[in-house]
Image (cartoon, rainbow, N blue to C red; front, side):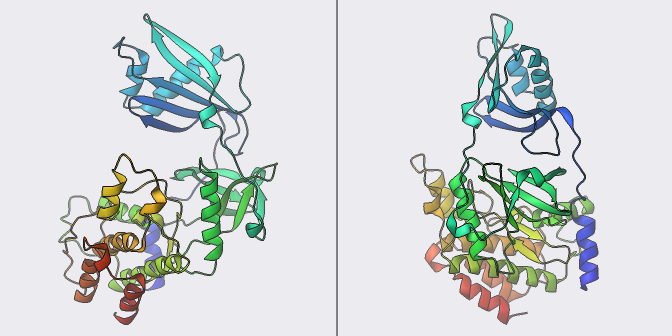
Length: 390
């Protein structure tokens, strides 16, 4: 498969080009849902293209057991949560006589058949940022005011932005500011790795505090997105009889590039913990790059069985202790299977339908996904095998 052919396929099945954001009076940002409680986040009177403009609002409501017809219950059961939450907050705007400089929270509660709205400061949503440490001071910094937000959802706390005439992915500092520093340190140490997404700049606010960092924007998107698009395009065609979209040479190259990225991580004693198709981006020319070295949780589909078992332990709270080389190898094995079969849904154990997949590759994947962590190959063995075979 030529580079031009591969680029055309990625253009066909990749995500659409981003467009500039449009300003609105009330911009929906996102929703958190936990055990019958919802919190919707909004920006009010903000320029949607500019960060830190306008006022931050949250709308909080929870299930009302005393009044089955309460608006809170209707919102929780709505099929259009974004739109209905927007309507509910818009209706509450006249009741907000004071906006907090941080985050203003509006709590909805129906009492004796009457809807009440309580306005408070949402201290849970106030984020604390850190300054650039000395070991990262050599990395270029860009003021957040120079970023222009674009349309298009890239991921949790990840936006598409324009900066100095170029398009980037902007990963914002979330609740774990220390975690952002750890991820920046990993990206800096692996800046020479061709299989790791390159770090372009640290984004800072007017106080020179870290608000996140920018990376190249990869238009094709992640491999899961590509495989989902292929499945939609195939429609009802039996995937076991479908012709592969990508040549084996392309899949083999992806397997090598991804494995080398994992090897580079392990060489600095860093473990991903969340190796999955969503965390592998493709360049317009079809090269694979690993992203996201700050997992906020475990992805059940790709996690090793020992990680899944321990993560469900109610007494376990330290995610870092679950990150090991054998666990990464297991996840990598499932990724290698998914690439070979052009599948975005994981099957355990892997089921092989494509008769053109070499036997040596099947045996390598099967070794990666054995239940005993100590019996799995090292990443060095995996890379050696992929480099040796064709």
